[in-house]
Amino acid sequence: MAWAEDRYSRLIGWLKVALPLTALALLSTVFLLSRGQDASTDLPYAEIDVGKDGLVERVLRPSFAGATKDGDLIAFVAETARPVGEGLGKLSADDVRARIDLRTGGTITFRSDTAVMDQPEGLAELQGGVVIVSSSGYTAETETLRAGLRDLFAETDGQIHAEGPLGRFVAGRMRLTAEEDGETVQMLFTDGVKLVYLPQSQ
Image 1 (tube, helix red, strand yellow):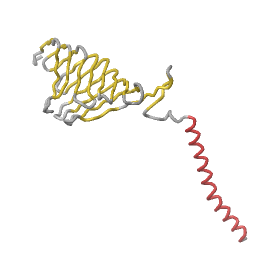
Image 2 (cartoon, one colour):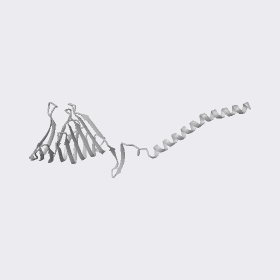
Image 3 (cartoon, one colour):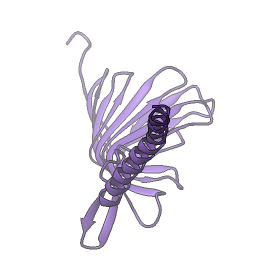
Image 4 (cartoon, one colour):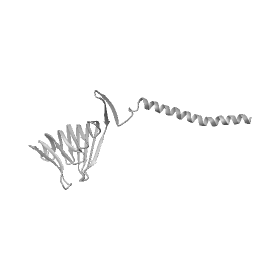
């Protein structure tokens, strides 16, 4: 009787060691198989497109954020982006949004269909349906806009249509800059400005 109980105890002790090891081996096999079959499809931040030139990486919802030397905050975000050339220093982005939070308290936002983000140069070239909105009450539309990724700077390449507290107007170009004192930000409209004044009462 004692011999049977001793044998039973040894069997139980052996099973306590063998069963967890077997379960661990099976679990490891499952993970290895799943990784070998489909390792990249679960990545939330990137996916691979197959094109005529081979594999092209597409980054999902990339963002760029920085601050000017005066403390203004600049942030860009896009729906998707693709590398231009080698590396990720220059990206071609789609559905781009940008926001500048001025140190003085105001805000300026940009929106465009596409953009090329050149991080080494610190420059973004927005194209297609560019909309500029300032907290001072101005809304402007143009086709192309160059904006700084690290500096408070923006400039259009061509005609711009805008509306604000003074009324509706058209200008050949628009330039956004900060004064040397860092306290004043100007949206300067030039090259044949045509204004339709709308009285405040309307």
